[in-house]
Image (cartoon, rainbow, N blue to C red):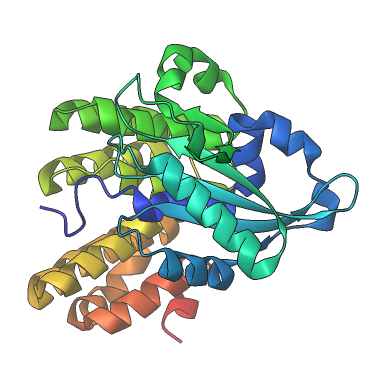
Amino acid sequence: MNTRSMDDHDSPWKEALEQRFPEFLALLFPDVYEQVDWSQGREFLDKELQQVVQDAELGRRYADKLVKVFAQDGTETWVLIHVEVQGEAERDFAERMYVYHYRLFDRYQMDVVSLGVLADSNRNFRPNSYHWKRWGCEVDFRFPRVKLLDWQDHWAQLERSDNVFALVVMAQLRAKSSKRAEERQAWKFQLVQLMYERGYERDVILELFRVIDWMIRLPDVLERQFLESVYQLEESKKMPYVTSAERFGIEKGMQQGMQQGMQQGMQQGEAAIMLRLMARKYGVDVVAAYRERIEKADAETLLEWSERLLFAEKIEDIFH
């Protein structure tokens, strides 16, 4: 079984938000997106948010991001993204939104816009406000929120969208709705296939591949079958370089092998993968002269060579 949990949605959401924050807003909160002056850039305030999270001590893991942007009128605004990552309805969600909001304002005296993303499977769970009242004293806090489950009814729209974040939403939906491993494998490949068909740049492919892989976990046997299908897809498109998916496969295999302590088997397996990739790039005859050297290399050396392989024009550049 893979070393990470079968559905670890925390880290991929954080990564996706950091890499594709404008696209996230454009897809899920278009009204907010239109109010931001993107020409002034954005800044992620991880330290400021971490201090507030520590103060709150509410215990449960969320994929939170705090981003400094500027409104169209020039006003500095902090946008708090609160993603419910564990996928189950929680009655304290709205309270948590309120607590984070007022703590940010209290500590930093900044305009804060709080946005909620609900990833649970309960169609009736749709909090968008926190209300408290006693003896004439009243709090009424309202926040925009999206229910990812609603996008299930607009799947065709996601498939047609040219917004890269649509694939993140699709991966989240399939991770939640697909219970059988074989079904998850099929959907995972379909999403990766769609990613390649859109013709994204290599860096974007790597970003999306990592997020999709992280959200839709597979047993090891099916994961290997999935990666083989991806390799075949890349070959059919005649990509002239060692692709993002192959690079990810190398790094992932090495990391998992190290974590499991399977040093010898990992070295043998990764040496075989590297030889295969080199053969694709330079030809079988050229690679033959380096086979013994690669098979005897340790894991750290193989990782270093695999990174050089990504950009080396000549095979000699890998081993300098």
